[in-house]
Image (cartoon, rainbow, N blue to C red):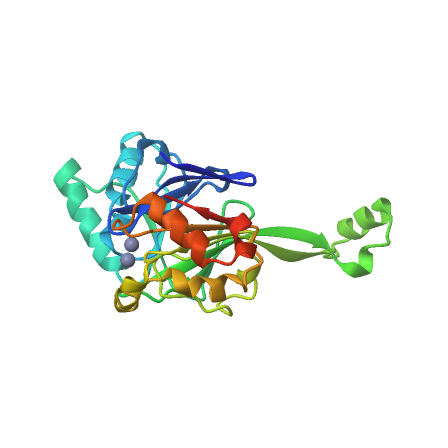
Length: 273
Ligand SMILES: [Zn+2]
Ligand SMILES: [Zn+2]
């Protein structure tokens, strides 16, 4: 399975337009989209689905049933709210067909504007996608407690005393870690104030050649020629392009991406092929 190292994180999975997209970051205990479900993904506890195209969610029955069969607690699955009921319906029918009863599962419908805390210290902000079916993007932030500025000059003993007396001495701050755009024709830069500061941006780039500009527009995907003006706004240390069309060979993708993106972007752009 392809692996891509981005600092402390390893991206595992696969992403090919119309075939399957599933990307796990084990260090964050999460998976973005689940078009297929490799067996080693079963133990990962959080699954964020961007939209209901088969290549992005059809691994869910395997993920759910394998956890159920192994006696594991249900994983936490997040899906766009439009389509949530149909998905439950499908899963209930498949599980009845498969096991004669319902698998236990946990699915949370999400929509743009929601913020979903998960694990102890992470939060997923739900952003609007722009695709041919309702879609969302995700921004994952780490939540940290930071000492309020007015207490910064106090000694350790004074801080402990204040804390014991019930004074709230910290503020909550958020560190933007990963943005996952899913399938989308673009992303509004003000979708979230921290979006452009994310450390890792996972961005679709379905079409890359000039002959497919119209197709990209029609099917609501990003085209490589839209990326320079988008990426220049991102401070991200790592930019991972994924979801390339099957029409292109890896050689052509490499060649076109690094030809069309300015040299200043090359060091931080990585391809998930
Ligand atoms: Zn797709
Ligand atoms: Zn799609």
